[in-house]
Length: 149
Image (tube, rainbow, N blue to C red):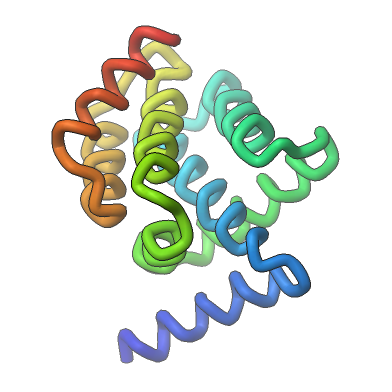
């Protein structure tokens, strides 16, 4: 059953990314940013802007490309049954430093509304664990994000 669910979502993400293998990684990353913005059940404008900025800067996208990717990622995040479908792609597709950078961006999204919720912190920790980011790197990313807000 779990394998069937995983295959279904892998196919959904891949179908959104046909012709561009990096698009699946971008979609998965954007979906994680969205998940963090929704962790406290209140998505504020500042968080939405932080998600868009993180996506645009990380992947060097135009405004239209950013809007399209964020919209697709919102749909994927809404349909997702777990974080694994996103984190497994990122864990396999990004280097250690890139994964640490993703965790820092997740913290930036969490800090965007100046109210880091315990649910946001828990979710970023879970994602970091699934990406195999060490606790030391997790804390360093958190501190960098807090300093840069």
